[in-house]
Image (cartoon, rainbow, N blue to C red):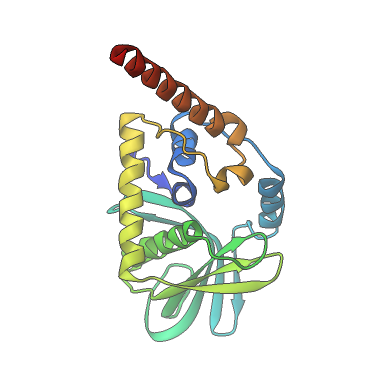
Length: 220
């Protein structure tokens, strides 16, 4: 029986945002919905239905399962645009050779967020391994504004994917959770109340004060 448990593709996005957040999800199974995550989930429900749509020389594959044994990751792509191309690859759902173009759906307006680029690039790397092909770019589609952001799968971004997977594997293997580091991202994080970054910062400050007082007593 195959007991392979790949790291979920979505976990790379969490790690890109905050490694502690990814660790809490991985090792503590913690989750708490916020207004942003609820809105995103509702918007995704309109997309997240496994299906195949044919539009001439293009086939849209929604909720398509992908994986990479080499990277030890797996999950579903929101959408893969399979465009007919004589030099493309062959996939089970389409009868002609195609060029693959992954598209990740996110809520809100067009913005720069590397964590989503990591997730999208990881999807492309899975597809490349599965179908022995090359994928140069994909897109993040922002549902609220109906705008796309093109993402080039550069060597640097691919290396970042590999490094992030290694960190997640280490966290899962050793059951570790990085220390909290309070910052601007914490304000909108749905796990803020469970993570308590400010409490961790206060505890560190308290320990520093105790050390400073101890040093003063030694000097005196």
